[in-house]
Structures are given as structure tokens and as C-alpha cells.
Image 1: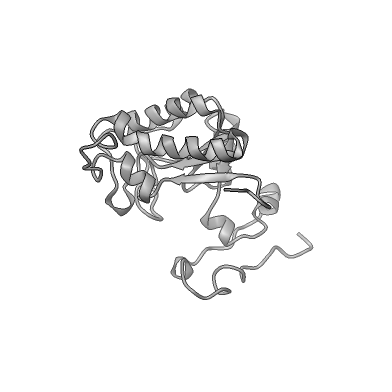
Image 2: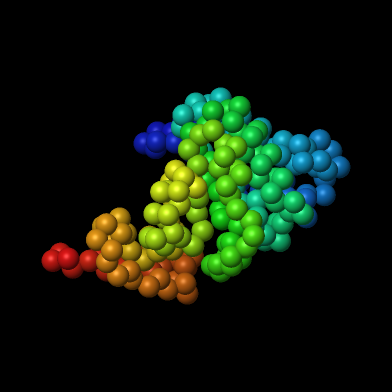
Length: 201
């Protein structure tokens, strides 16, 4: 593995994909050393982290996790414990960041407030902590100013606002995204044709 032309690698350990399926006890029914206990279910994810770190260095590696989500029916009976175990276990690698999906984002594109918080994970992880999940300008600023996160990731509203940093800077209105154009084969509609701000703003 080589990061030619890239700054680093984010390991996708979220959203019901392969690594997440190992992590979650509602879908991981293995009976070997990769199933059963929390330690066993996290083993594969941590082995992947180790392999990538060994190849390119910890300072070029991040990971994305979604312990509270249930994408593709990959849910866990104790997401708080899962999140905390991973946050603590990741510290030994010294990776540059941990990127975690908010508990409120329990279904694709839907935002529900829940009693869960990423604060314990944020406090446990010693590197840069990034959050994602339905943030707007105010939510993001609050997360940073209160120390809840070091970075905030934006997805859907960045897709529909290619100049999002500028819009946030001057508190300009945002383009509305069109969910029907997400993940379609057309290379233009819904991905590269959202308008920029007028130059006089």
C-alpha cells in the first residue's frame, strides 16, 4: 500500500460495511477469535489498523466508526461499550484521528436526538476527534467551541454547496440538496451542478 498523491488513509469501519459487521454483536455470529466477546469482535478492526499503520505510518491513518448506527442491520446491543473499547484501543497505535458518526444519525439521512453522546469517546481518544452527522453551521461551531470535537465533517450540505466554507464564513443561505440524485450513475446532475455564491456576496 502506498499513499501516492494522498495525505493519508481513512479506514472505513462504519455504516454496516465489512469492519462494522465484525464489530456489531447483532450481525457477528462467529464462534472463533473474531466473534463473541467485545475484545474478539474488535480484533479484526484493530488488526486492519495495525496493518495500515505498519505500511504507511500512524501519522497518515484515521478511522471512521459508527457504533450507535444500524446501517444494513449492523447494530450492537451496547454501543457505548463498543465505542469506548475502540476509542481506548486505538490510542496504542497513535493514529492521527478518529472520525465518529453521531448517535442521532441512526438511519440514512434521518436525524433523531438520542440520550447518547460521543463525549465519553472524545475524552477517551487521545488523538484528533472528528464528528459527523447532520451538523449545520451552528451545531458545528458549538461542537468546536465546547471542546466536544476537534473537527466536524459535513457531507450532504457540502455536496450541495461546493463553497460551503465561504457560505459558513459569511453566514450565507445554503443550497438544498436533492437526495434523489445521490448515488446515481450520472456524473453531473446532483454532484457538480450545484451553484456557487454570486461573486458580489
